[in-house]
Length: 280
Image 1 (cartoon, one colour):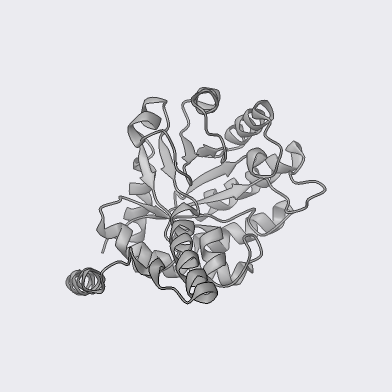
Image 2: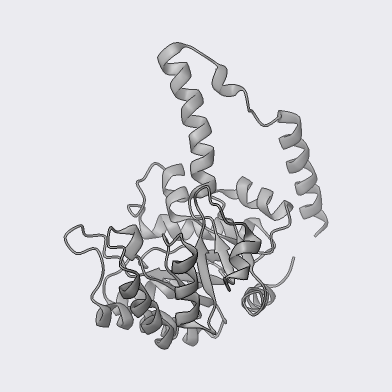
């Protein structure tokens, strides 16, 4: 088992060159399975965790989220980055306190969003949003951990798909100390390239939580340095579960079980995984 410091150094190194694929598990089993496939790092998903625990996205309490993040970190040997929403605080002081708590879970990275959670005003005014990023930066710096701070402009996820404003925001967040920048919801080549160029040489994360025409190689060719799946894998699993459950409930049918993962395959994977962990 690598040390926490080693995992944090490795996560930062993975942002320096190439294109890091950062899939998002939503529980211990999916985290260990993704590690078993050879992914070099993982990230939590706030929505996936919330759904698994019976919450809507962005309604999970901070203590429950911190516990969930810690469980994922403990479950794997690779670095883990936390999808930490808007840091569960509106003011800079609260952001700093919660970022410190997130760092204590053992994460190698974490994100901060500029969404308010309020329909009438879904994004923080830019000066306040920048103050929040600076508070997160200060908390990371004071921890002396090297945790990678990712700042997100949520325009496209809150119904304000203004690319110019999103670029203005992530540029300001980069200047405020964010290590990695992220505009979830952009999908076209032109949008992605524009964001990459705007904050270069800092790395950009692109969300692919949907069926996409692009491959990892395509996105890497656009200059993207990190790709995450958000709640995509969790929703893919929920899609299969919902289809099977609804067929059973509405028509007494079992045809939703047609693509079941073989029990023997799952047993073998987790048996072998436990054996490997016992030797670590």
